[in-house]
Length: 208
Image (tube, rainbow, N blue to C red; front, top):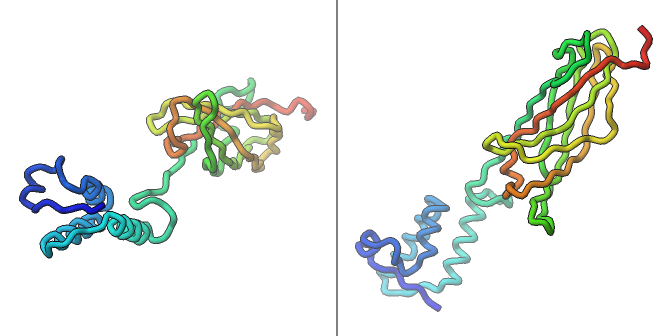
């Protein structure tokens, strides 16, 4: 099967009927590299030659590889910035809500699959550094609430091994893996924010 390129004047007058519809997509998606493909096709037309589609596909794949710098990612892809927020939503009497803070948070999704119920199941990992700024040992419970790029709630996850014991004037590191599901989520990159909702209380096992 061969593909002939229409004259440039005809191309300008009617994009929708271009003899090689895939070429227009290359120009749009690949930018300069897609334009190179167009020029190559057009030059071949001027010489009165026809271009085998398989050759064009091979050239396209090579340019896609070069544009992506061999990273294995699609051309034009950008790293997603995953954000995190922390809030003490409940504190026992006598404890200030700012007694506990986080020094750092790291999280990322690393796998996903479509469930039989047509929900997207996302698995990921996280690590949180909790700081107890007070002079008493505290116990902390928390859950992870995930939001999409529009700030809409997706799903929540309750970690195992709670509550945590936070030593006074110390940092406690907690982390692990999470699993969430959503029928509205289309891809893990649509996730944006992990909201850490915490409750704190005085450790009852410690005598005053």
